[in-house]
Image (cartoon, rainbow, N blue to C red):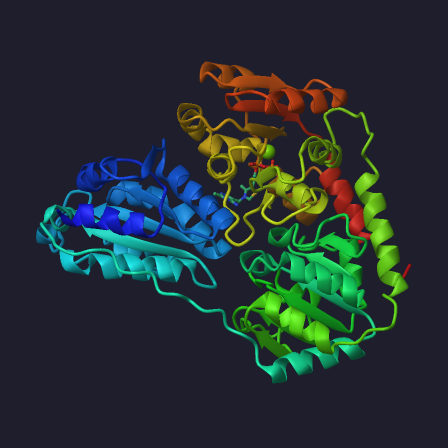
Length: 547
Ligand SMILES: Cc1ncc(C[n+]2csc(CCOP(=O)(O)OP(=O)(O)O)c2C)c(N)n1
Ligand SMILES: [Mg+2]
């Protein structure tokens, strides 16, 4: 047995089913070891795709997704997806090949100090400097990646170490017990909740990671308190619940902002500040906050909780429920707000304008997707519309990157989602810009048999940036944001995929339905009317929270 064999045994011990990656000379031994293992290697067309696949796999399962690259250029390609996992709180382990330890001290072909390079985009990273430490490095790596707040870990394996003989076996996984909040913190939180006049709940991805959906929904119902979710907190409370105010987190004002303007207590549950800065909803730091989470609150001058309830989230909520007493009805203002938000959602439901308005596009997408089906959003104007308008029945059914927010995640992410849930429908919703960043992974999807639908919001440009430019510099004032596109239908067909073009608003639902029935990946080119972006900004700018 060599070190590479032992490394792969350790991966098996961690329950790894897939390694996403791209081969190179410096990881030959690892690939050979994977070939002889129970793990399936998924060969990708770019290391970035491999890292995004591992990222979304980790986010959906809570088990670290694993990606592999060679040294130098392979490793630099891997970094974006690794950084995405780290800032989105997704468990991921990246393994890189490396030159031998005998040539790291001199100018060496393709050599970069990868431990130094990955340090800022990981929670922890190390080089395997001698064969015998492999089980400890791997166990520690997985433990770090998977423990709250999850993130990315990097392991660097020099090729001479990989080939060295070794004895040893994987370490046992330790039993990590739940931690429970102190009684004092629960009592203080319950008192604050009891006395608040107009509280609001803000729920984030931490509640999904902690599988606290049932407890949060129970809390909302029993306490009669309205709840908003961050982009990454969709589905914690089903969107049909009468007290949900849906997603918050646009950088500009929106209906939901009014809920925060009027509140006298924010109950933040599993809220990650990275997604939506508290400075946006609590600029002068005056709103009292109860922080309920698995770990202590991040420091921010706008986020200094009056009490932190730290421990298993479901348990904390259940204990608070035993002590809190709210006989007063929910504020009628919150109910009005809900009515306004819903009216806005439905405003374009039957709009047959073409190119299709983003609101209508997303409304139709929701109609064809079942409650457990999964949408993976890319990053751009379409993401903002998905965040506002695509609502979820359950957690992890709309994946949005809102920590790192890297374009190019949707297609590799959808492939990973289809691997995890082969029986669910999966849609990669992407801009035309993001599509061209990782569309090569559609070949990977075809080859490994993961059919999903890629829905392109086609505006011939970097729509979100155009939107921001126009907000800053006035209508018509945008620069460097337009480009040409290939014929996406022919492009898809040339790869052996199904290609569709939406030619009118009424086409979209039947095209989506047909595309979702295919047994190969399908691509839908859908022209989108982004004049709605500016319209929305105007409407939001005129929003008067006092009505
Ligand atoms: C990798 C990466 N590069 C650049 C950006 C900055 N950025 C954010 S959105 C956006 C435009 C996205 O364009 P497209 O994919 O066509 O989506 P649209 O906004 O048109 O819906 C850009 C350039 C980013 N988030 N990620
Ligand atoms: Mg675009």
